[in-house]
Length: 530
Ligand code: KIV
Ligand code: ZN
Image 1 (tube, rainbow, N blue to C red):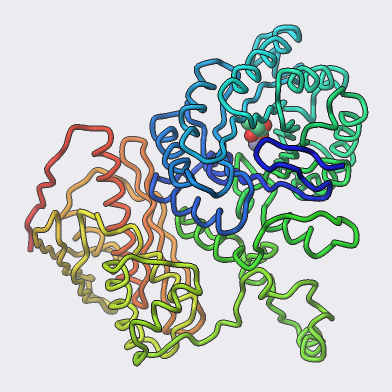
Image 2: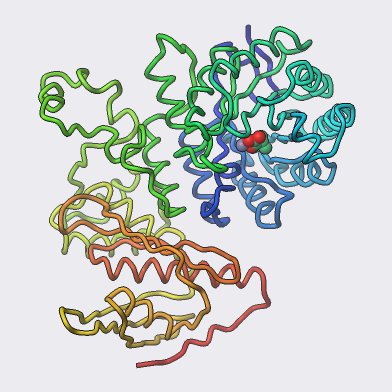
């Protein structure tokens, strides 16, 4: 039976709404925080991926969160996904969420309250009656501001079933249009989630007029299985994140749920609006922004997800790929690492290539990226799609950087102390430095410290190869910490030391931007050295 939904109109009974929470639950995981510009890039990619609802943040949590949700709402002021802001049940939270999502063409407020005895006693110190009262008030207040209101029973999977029914009934009566039952602590088994949704749909008055939603955490590695079981029991919204990021062990991975639905239509015949060919690109963008790659054997998006190593498997694949592949790599955006272009390729071809990879750059960014592409093609025999993606990700969003790496030379060898000489442009002024160190990377970072003195400490240094081969580009992630603030920087280059310097400079720029947001304007005084 079709439901008439305030944001989606008449929804077919087998249509599953994909609610992405990468920018909220995902961003809550340690080390995964993103700045405004990064969240906007991610939001753009999620819209292209075809998510129906985008939970853009938790507006009451901080001014930064509010600004991000509001900017994303402004970006989707004419069309695009429903933009959602999270709120607890307090009126101040709800009003802040309402204000943040207001510019969006389609807005949702997602309000939640704990319903398990444990949470109510220890965390909320509220009785069952208090909680029912708060649900009624919070949902009604949210409905005064938006037509599309989601209510969540935090720790729902560990809630007394009779009380859960009363909570859901209260939320529906107050005007909730989506009811979400999270497995907040990742404790449930698939049959538990199926039982809960079947019970609610059977027992709660008004259940037929709302969308039930699954939100599963992965503490026991069951988030995707629990999500599928919830769908089979009547849930029609899935809450998920790219690469499965999220609190603790993460949330259900969006790409895994989407591909399970696409691949197993025989058993789970539900439709989503996900453009599966964009999955890999979105996953890679998140990895680039956060500095965390997925593990090689990660389903769908891991480097080995479609690699066939054993002779028997390779033989089968050559005869018929269906022998060992249940979905094609192309269906999720893997290309067969097609050779892109060489050093003779022109600017127009480069722009076309970027368009097929999903990038549309302004003229200045295009010029910079093209210059770097030419430079790369001169040094690297074969330039692949992955190289272009790494290079462009390295370029986008850097136009306003205060510190720019202009030149770097490192002298190193067995038995000698490495020395790095570099030239930076700092607020338009050219500065140079020479420094030694315990290795080429250490010397480079010491030279950077001389030009831009700072107290930040290095928390993470990671190197990854973009493609295979000794001439492959290295993608380096650097994490710095200053006064409890963490920033990640990325850099790519065929020379690992240059990639490291780029990553460090990127992190420094983010640190400077962070400082500027929390302190009065500061003049950067580059220290001249060398
Ligand atoms: O896991 C959870 O319970 C949540 C709620 C805020 C929906 O993320
Ligand atoms: Zn959650």
